Length: 267
Image (cartoon, rainbow, N blue to C red; front, side, top):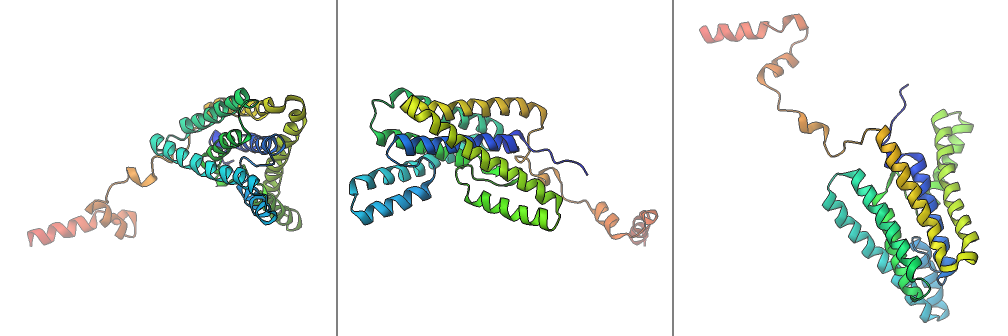
């Protein structure tokens, strides 16, 4: 059985880099900037509701700004996607470099800027990643949220090892790598935040450089996915002769309809 070759931006270890970046990013903002998540907007909504219930209205603004900034960041990348049309590889490079630049900016201004500015910039960063990278090995993928991936891992563990389905076993291993990478990114950020404080954002920034390097190496080895050219675009409308050929049963009788049509014309 021939092994499926995926474009570099859909490969397993590239997805693992994205998960590690997301885990590090959320751990950094939660620990260093007021308990707000840069990417996990579900968590921000929960914390917003809890703070509203307790009357902590000053904190509500932090969560609202993160949510609104995430939405604006998504709109911007959607515009970028429209601009680049179907050039997936260039778009992937653009988004990664864009994320890296925003993280470096946060590292430069973090000690002087209010928490709300930092959270806003990093929410925009997280939105870019989620909007652009939404497939892993041709399956739906969200690098910022592990709930669905953990569910998929559990399902494939059951199918793979209880019902002895080998493809499901491999999928369980793959999802385990992604979940482990997300936790690993958060773990590393947790180690560096007390030491580097605001500059700890450079931890996920370094992971972005790793993702860019992976993309540059593996995009040369695997052909780009030609989604920009639908398969039907090169097909033409069947000719009259082709229609006759489709209707005939044996291949040896393909000349007979032409002979009959000539007799009708001369009749």
